[in-house]
Image (cartoon, rainbow over all chains, first blue to last red):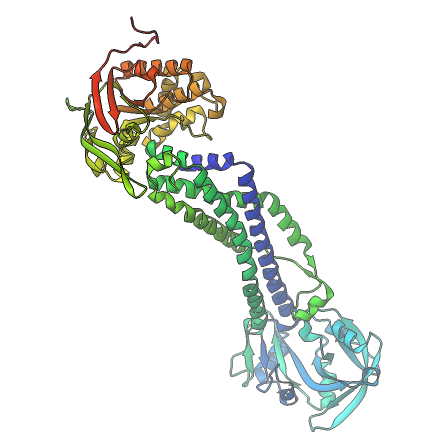
Length: 391
Length: 242
């Protein structure tokens, strides 16, 4: 009964109801869209990192610290037996990282020389391009690296490095391919070459800095890993997750502002409605409704704005969101500088959890702002309400 | 009611705070109303008619004194019990009709039955019977804004009697009606009083209403100045009595 009356009252308010519901639905959709983009960013970044670099986790040489470039010179050693066996079985790929330099256009630029097996099929990384017979050392660089150094496929560039004994050495390399990858971590400041070539150049046969495990492959035991530290996929994605979390937290203020504006409209409508309909309120009490029932009726009426808004959002928002999720958002080039591995197009992810969670927040807040001005009904005298002087 | 009066008040006093002082709206009102009466509280504006009606309808509480309505002591009723008393036993008719604007005529009349929790079929039967009694069964689907003043008040009468209340309180029911509609509404109430045995208590200063009353309680400055049985000058057929 209350629902029917509340619904009728709401519809009876006509344009005012629909404007409120529209504003509320807009706020809902904007929040869902923004959150969906962040979710998409998270998903895409994680997927790209896993596919290109992180795999099913990594074992690091005990001295390896990706945040300490000075430690890199010592972060290499022979593969422990367990890890070597995994590499031999094709369940892992070894990478040797050596500090070095290149001389594009005669200017020295420090880089990390990274050796990878051109035959590896474990990562979605175009290492096969290195499997070529050229007089120079075949080199693979990323598009960002190519842009910053001015190098292109087919260019020659001098390489410099120090071998195992600390002796400087240099040779010409040939850029055999430039790869486009969303993962900056395998691009910027890095030059890839065949693992065997780098081992030979540095006189470090069988050495590696890290070993990437195949997705789903069981990691060797700690004993078999010979003191190399296991970094799980989640460990390696922690930075990305943290970055997304920070962006999500930062956007909370905007969500709060959006919701506040929408709720203000509902609140105003409630106040206006209660004030204008005092006689009706008194009549309902005279007909036998308790104050609690009348309070419930007005609160329900206000809360239905939320339901209406969700309905509206479903009608015009669902096709929009579906289209947006499919088409994605073509990112501007400078998005690359944000440090996210998300590629050229960001596809938002509108999960059921996000939709249901946001809908619940909208409904709960609408119910709250509907109830706040309605509380006064609890102290209204029916006779005063009938005279229109209760509030 | 086991022979007990439907309404019994004893030294009923209602005082409102007014401009730093007090306004005595009711001054030791004592009266008894039996079941089936067709009575009116008459008097000039500000004499306390509506205040008395509100207290008898458990919409307000007296400052002092007691009011027993259908066996319930109004002055001690909590909000919930007062609402239950109104819901089950008292019908209200207002000067401004007070129909719910978003409901149809049918739904307006049905509303008290919804509060009583009656099943749909029973509600429908009672609503249609109530609307037929006031001659508005064919307007069941209309909205209040599609009705004339007289029709609106007849819908309000249907709403008041649909739950078969023991008591109907009508506050200036003809104040917003022209003479023809006033007589039609009053004739309807006289007939319902006779057919259903419902007690009607009016507050009015309208001579047209007074002409239909069988008992006239005159209030002056909140006190009962006269309480007398009268012979109606108009009957159920609306004609002036010989």
